[in-house]
Image (cartoon, rainbow, N blue to C red; front, side, top):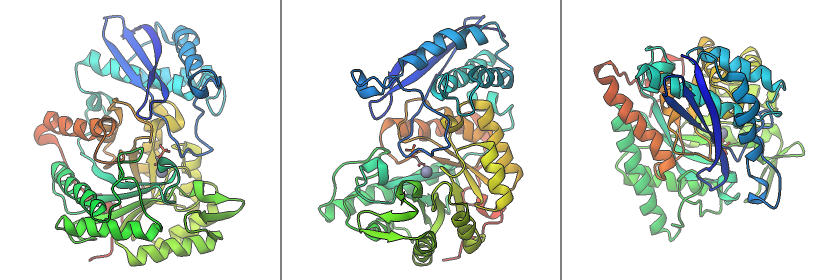
Length: 432
Ligand code: PGA
Ligand code: ZN
């Protein structure tokens, strides 16, 4: 099925910042669209999101050049090609750009088109995206990793640690996992209200972190879990994204709120202390993106007791994932489409992660749209985990809701192993 036309427009993401929407039309008139997300705590090895940089327009954030690249060069390169050969189209896009970081045409331009091609082919096959992307092999519904408090760059540094999340460890279905999260999320509001600290939500829908110390957040989170009727570490585990690259300055890790400064060794010791004290089942970016020694040290110290996820550390980049696998720096990889810039490269990153016996965690960005592509990506690849931010704001709920629809569509073919994904991969959470 040939591509008939490709075009793009500037739309706005969940922060109200400009982003790219690409639309691909096939020769039979069927269309697909791709809406590109955008990060705030980005890794320096990510593919480049092209922004115009004109202070007179949208504070320099407009994406009119990326849109023009879609309408011009990119359209000319892919019109007439077979949409069903996603890999060939994506390889063509990568070669057309010609840079290692997609900075010429922009990863936002390339990804919008790549996602739109995937959506158009699913529509042409008259099947949901997960089925089209996964060739019918995707049946595993993901365990949600859901933010309760959002800090770091998503809350103007109001607290240092970026994501305080929960995972429903004993949920037997995806729906039950959402119910557990619902209970904890709303109990957390009650806890914050009780402390006089309820002040709205941060970028990903988690409560605004009105706290003085990072450890205060743990206490509030544990209180919310208990108030919701659960035992921390039994039904509900804690999951952290330290986003440590943002805390790393001139060779040291800094907790700005507490005015404390750490060497790499000291910082990993602090985190390991938290892991002793709190029921943490997953930790992401505990070390800065290029602190490879720190990463190795953390991985050795944690052993197989906890999921250790690289986000800024890997940036969904095959070369970095390979290096991490060889060096033993983690046991899981955060997967974000726009870190690498095409659907095919993202699928390859997931497959490489899985082939190493590691866990892929499909993830949204802090700047999101109503596009629920990643819900389909998680199921299509049997990734087993999905991280979308919190349990509020429609750009987040669009993804959680889409998995509910996928469950309906899969019917009896749907599988859910929940936290069983950890033991299946040799990660044994301490029993509580
Ligand atoms: P970002 O945050 O989208 O701002 O990078 C998400 C994350 O760090 O996981
Ligand atoms: Zn992260």
